[in-house]
Length: 373
Image (cartoon, rainbow, N blue to C red; front, side, top):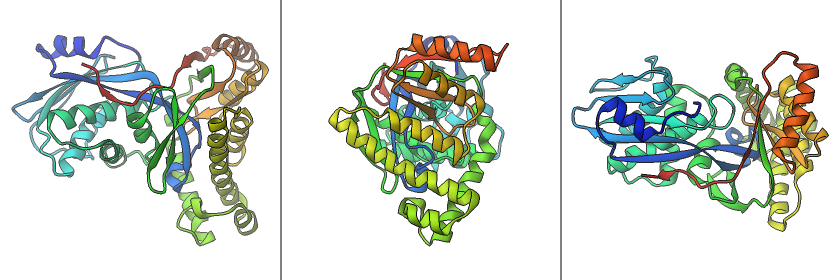
């Protein structure tokens, strides 16, 4: 979603009454640890200072009405069961959250919901997780469900994976609900434990390539299957339990490459955490992560590669694609947004003449979701 009118104003204009409250959830940047979440691995995301805001109020008739400030139409569901197979469009995300609460035994009832956002859609910054998390926070409070953050993350993940049908791990939900200002969040997907890690890096710059990342949905699912196949051949439950010697010695071709990325990426996350705790630089780990995602996992694209190369020319300490890849954004550390924009602009004029320039902006590590009004 692009930035639109505030959710509260949209609610009053569209529904003709005041909301009972406003809840926000941020987007996220994954600093390092990509495609590790569904392999029981490690990742280091941080919530960012761009949010989805949801204005909400209960309804007595059990109906659900969802309106977006971005002008993508209203989605309605009458009183009664919700079914994942229905084509709800963008409304599948908020309706999926209500469905997940109901599936968990919570009498969620009916709601009017209005949404506004400053998180770019389809760019790997977790706009969908921000939306589901903000809705979940609203429903949790208004329905008196009393779920804690871990339970809310699980509900949001179920909404996306089962109702919307997106085969993703839980990185996004944990990051947008558990973020802490000035910190990244070490996530261990073996047991879903999270540990705040001081993030004394800067500037933190995001470059939006302009390539929508949903074009890679089929390829994403394929990589999950390949990781499962590799783990099966190695005789381990998941690639978290694989070692590099076994990967190199017992796997061939694509499966070896996919598993090598996961195993080495987990090592890079651990090294990044150790260095951040000592106040040391991590740029070389970001470069290595991008190379692994480009060559072994094959989820980059020419535009993201060009951005990372331009960041190097601008004097960045490190850069890599962030999110699942196949388009979306890159994160750049250690150089100003202006310097990155200049370098990217020069690269674009040579490699992508006539194409819209990427959007470049600075982000800060922010708190996770919560009530804001």
